[in-house]
Amino acid sequence: MRVLDASAFIRGYETNEETASVPRVREELNDESGYRFDALEGSGMLVHVPDEQSIDRVRRVASNTGDRGTLSETDVRLLAAALELGATLVTDDYAMQNVAGSLDVAVETIGREGISEERSWRFKCEGCGRVYDTDEGRCVVCGSDLSRMR
Image (tube, rainbow, N blue to C red; front, side):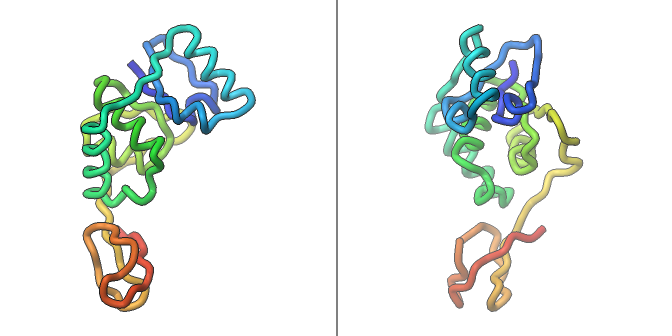
């Protein structure tokens, strides 16, 4: 089974495998790509709503890899759906690929080459230079913004 990100519909991805997606992907699509979603749903694509435990697990793993701040709620739900369904995630999003690797979720890319290595991110204060393992949003010492670093 393949779990399809919005990029699969935008790029006209085709497969003979069973497919699934999440309702939020449809909300991101318009015009022709939206019609592709509707057509696949009408021909049997599963529109899956992942449970809260899987969503929370994805968020925890994304926090550990440093990708939580770059993943949308749609991304989190797609990862959770792929995890629950034991499916391959079809996406070009690098942060999603990084988190999928930590979740042992297989990934298929469409228009771009996939990631070559998993990365862990840390966060550095732009003001005082303090380094954090997780994205705290702002530095607890001086209140400056944090920037992501390898």
